[in-house]
Image (cartoon, rainbow, N blue to C red; front, side, top):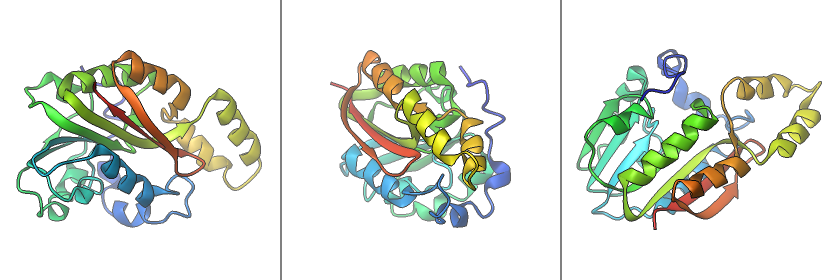
Length: 219
């Protein structure tokens, strides 16, 4: 299974200069970026003997925060983004970078994972695809394994409307349009979908107006 917009969200054209752009947290889309990535890896509780899946690994900014793991599999649809990741991951003994869509990777033979992490990637999937991803993540995790997500999210429809009202006729109006052109999470619906997939929600945290983290575990 391949997500319907996988090719539209291939960020080859963004790879050059991407790391410089994400460090600019004055952009509301990137506010809280570094703290969110740190929290995602911290909540994943990755042991030195863990096998880890990074969905939407990009240039490796989240995986680079993993201090030690037996094996890390990083997945991204962009070859240009993947090409920039290895230099950041030399401290890890076994890294496999796979060019694939977030959903189709689960159609391939995979090990059982102790942890799955994903930052700023799952908003490329529509609501139904997110729910399917959660089911696939559950199946790929060992019992007790954690899945932690950090991404662009609205707390609820009312929360979305409140942000839209506050940002209308301001310099942030175009930022909101850019976010809405993709598939930002609805936190309330996603929490229900995660639990329906069998994942127990352990923690959630807001990092900015537009970003949240969710930590889950397969019982």
